[in-house]
Image (cartoon, rainbow over all chains, first blue to last red; front, side):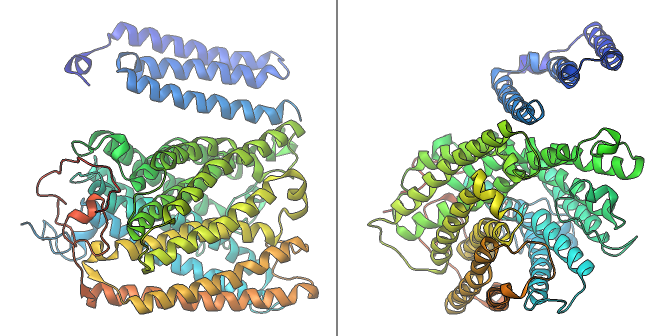
Length: 95
Length: 528
């Protein structure tokens, strides 16, 4: 990793915006349980949680400012995660 | 020349010089002693089970005690022995030396991993001695047993949860070590195969272990707060527990077996005096096993009530994982072809590993096929299968590894005659113990019962006698190793003619392994 990447500092403003977004998404994921979505209920919960995780990874954990190697590693992990989810739902959606 | 790691005098004295040491070699031995002690406990529990099964009806214990004994046997062997087994013991001791480094990337974190392991182990074992009786759920803590039983499940579950952190920290340490600390000239494809399998394993430890962590916490929440994740009466789903548990615990099988395969891949070329056949195929098959191994967990649940679509998908994926495993076996056997074979104790362990691993693998296909699975699920066949894979795989590789690296670790040589006699006794006992269980399963004897119908008596006698012989073999092996580690002949730096970096340093290695970090200018398995 180069020295430049070490020096990158994210502004408080960005962090605050992300924090507010995370709180809004949390409120949405609670509010959405009032709506009867049928089989999409779990999908919605997973989707909202994924967006929140992505924000944390990209900004709070600095993935956006890291070198490509780390992005590839995290990307591959996400691919594994998605496949695990898809296979799990081969059970739940066809039971 | 600095003193070897066994004689080095640091800040602390006596036992503190070990339990507070950040030297990867001492930590490896700390794991070895802990894992070895737990293995002896687990093996004795297994022997007690086989003695109970030597005749129908009650022989030496009641049904409830038997339930607790097989639960403790499973928890001890899986969480305390085979998961940390090869990576924590031989990985810690050898990984830095094999890649030409002075230590792992985070030595203090490494010591913390051992402490966390010990704390988790004590917590898990405390479940035996306090509260309302030892847990009786089996090592899988299946719902609804685990939240309905009156036995003392919580400490065992929390113990497994804590042990997970040790595994994650070790995995993280190894990944960083391999990315950052390989010696100059050691490109990825010049790295020996044991580190490669540790690399694949470390990714599983890092990614899959948190899933079982959260699953075990869900059991705690279920028992203490009655939330209803897995309780159908509250809208929960017991099969969800099985999914979550096996999403970790199937990849965990590869945490156990991949380093075992790595150790075999080190032993075979050394005693064949020939470069390993298909180095890159072995590397990619390790990565493929680690990857595909994430997607096959459902084959533990074929009769649990999953959808038909999921059943087909899991069966197909299970068959896929056999391909990289077979690639490994073909490459090992091809390595032996036209080789100058040196028949030494580690070689016996390695070749008998291939034999029992093949039986375990093929019987796995019987279980991976949907139709035959229905017939043999939850029978003694399953118990035979996973003992052939887990004990036959990890156990044989572990003993092979300890006989292979023994001169390096202790700087002494063991008594070869006793070592070979121990291996032979163990091998005969092992086959007599687990072989009949395939037959018993096929004719319908269920697992996890302390009693059985009279027609199953004959094979059970053979199996129980096999257990006694096998334990006798174990006693010979362990006694020989303990005595030899103190009084054995002094070993040379490279007694087997190995070609990887650990054989270039003195036996036992100096504190920081290398006086000067070596420059690697050749492939790992080149023999003159």
